[in-house]
Length: 499
Image 1 (cartoon, rainbow, N blue to C red):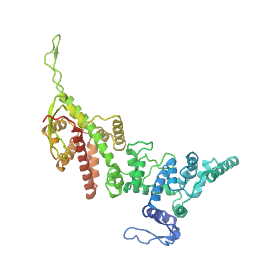
Image 2: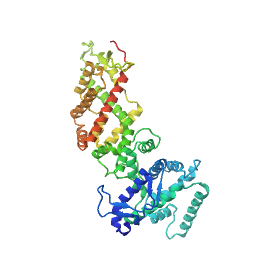
Image 3: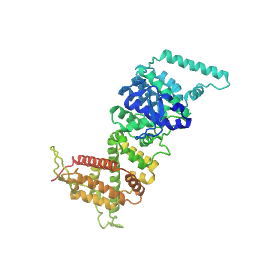
């Protein structure tokens, strides 16, 4: 029994006991409500599944329905990152607070009552933190009296002005949490269940694809100011949280959603986690986001490559003579020369009947790779800055498209368009998709200088994938390529055809 174990041994078993309780609470919805030290047994030998702890005496159990479990998960997230305004909403959903709650009165009281608890350390440290919040200094009678009066006033406000209620299962849940925390504090005097449970919550957010969990995941990954753009720093931070590494806000004990731990997981481990069964929810959420990122980056890279190629391939201006002007007329601008192009033409029946259009390189570029609007440019800059911060300047240059397409590559692209590669009847077939992905790979390998670090990073990460993870990555890449090709066909659909 844990009641007979040394403190060091209890400390070693805390993670197993915590995982068991959180799994019962948030996964099963049926939990052991009396996990005192006498009901927890340390096994002499691990089981075949690796279990080292057993629970006995299941006479006191309780159930929680799925909706309340989801609301509790949301509450843990908001409590862990000190988001008390949204925590009020969680408490309303849990029927702890009424819908017409006075938020202006409740939020400051939440801060005073819950912040010391999140920091952990049990009743003693909670009391110390509470005294600090109310300015109750040791040895100062005046501060002690003033702090006690303020604390009493807040308590009366809660009792008289805030009509809170406790759901039936909350009392038994509170008993279980207090009991488990008491055991954990024996092995770790600074233990706090909110912060310690956050990695479990992060893993659940990444794994499950239910709408309720997806909403909570979106809230974590997207900026809290109502923004609709994914914050890469939050994605990386959440991956680290799920791996058990949590960065806290400076000078506080709360989760910093935007901070990536310095000792966090590397790129290879992050990619492996993203492609595992544990990140199913995240992959579903990122599906549209990745497509948008690929579209923005491909347009930026293509436009820069074509521009650099045209500058290099344009012949120099012919010489001029004094008083006579130009002896030889200037050559036309390359991007303004009309060219016959065989383009896709999808009919109402869904069948592609390729047809010929006459277009300049400039008009073709503007159609297949429209110039980024202001929001897209800001997003692209953010991606480059994040890439620079987390992966280095070389990767940032890759994201920005600096020098990625060589002159020869652009010539090959334009030649392929002229020869009818876009006019194939099976434009989104597996063969075309494979050709596109192979072209991207060859481009990366031939990039001068800037992609060396990126190529090494990717090859090392892919090398560490299992066969199932590699297949999942191939499927994602192929599906992404098909979507890009379909978007390309849609952008060319309005071009006037001559044949």
